[in-house]
Amino acid sequence: MNSVIFGIGVTVTAVSGIFMALFEYFHISTVSAAQMGLFLTLSFSGIAAAAIKAKRTYYARTD
Image (tube, rainbow, N blue to C red; front, side, top):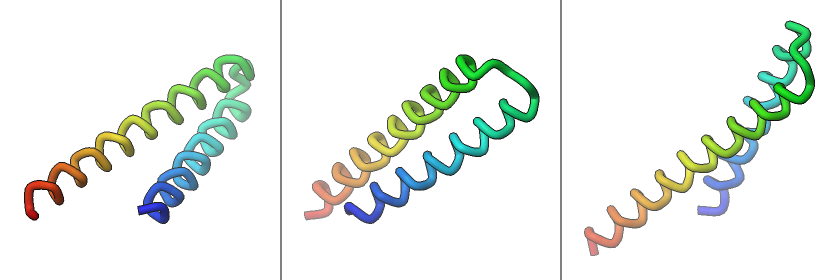
């Protein structure tokens, strides 16, 4: 389970890093890039939390 969370964390970091690079490339201000990075991090962690919750619910029902 921890490896899944770690993998998701690495993916989120990579994706937000890519978006930061794109924002810098297109000369968008660092503040809006930081806000977008924060939004991406929060949305991905929300997706991860929902996936973990769904998985736990599924395994709880199969016992």
